[in-house]
Image 1 (cartoon, rainbow, N blue to C red):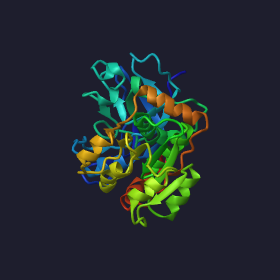
Image 2 (cartoon, rainbow, N blue to C red):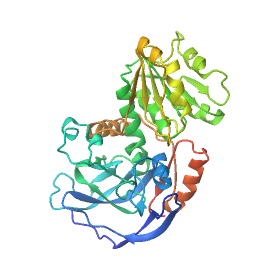
Image 3 (spheres, helix red, strand yellow):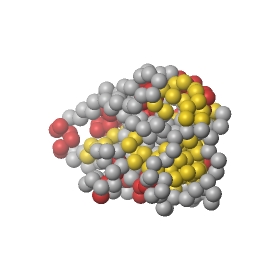
Image 4 (cartoon, helix red, strand yellow):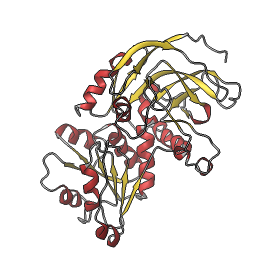
Length: 353
């Protein structure tokens, strides 16, 4: 396929100083390096990580100025001379992991997200809140052309991340998983991936709206942290034998849920930390952790195989992404809603407006 005409300038949302806000402005379109592709980003999901990147409240420095975003779905419009397995016109996704060295001990064992030289989209390199974005060809997600780019965009981070977390939990079909923050963007997909994997779920979140949305997505029980007088007991009671779930996925953006999870997880169960509340700590009683053989672990983003598997679930029609699409120019409004905790599901930005 011949190379399409590429403009020299594009619209983007740029973080010019720590704390924001983002500035909607025109910036140059970059050219891909030898091992890179240039992607005409059509849609990009908005993740809570993007808000952290703008606020600068994680213990990892961002580049400045910064174009955020790491859930970009689009079309390859140019490629470097070393790229052979990605073609012009291919539909691809730009993920949080923009690139890695492919040669360290982590990359060689399919743990490329742990690569010490990892490039992070929308954090250490410019991301997908622009119309044309650069990514390492080896790491772009391959998206079947049968998939709607608008709908699949959030799968590229939220979907892959929760799918990886469920795999890391070790929960088997028929077992119970409590999903903390189940009404948010990650949680709404975690419920569906869990169901597709044969797992039974307890949704933990706040409010009647999220009760309805999580049950519609397959949650068999709902625990409202806003009204519960004893969350630990309520979560245990939600399982048939009252012993609690075999696994917990922590997607929360505050610290308190991380302190509660080991109290209601079943003995020999796994607590999987995924959410990254700023300046938070995880504490658990040593005695209970030992005698109940509780496994506490972190789960980061998925590798390339996890990505392909997560997309395959979507392509088979097993994952429906609850989302609302707005123009790229409205990104700051999305951040405000996120700050106020008013987002149910996921927001997606259309880069054409």
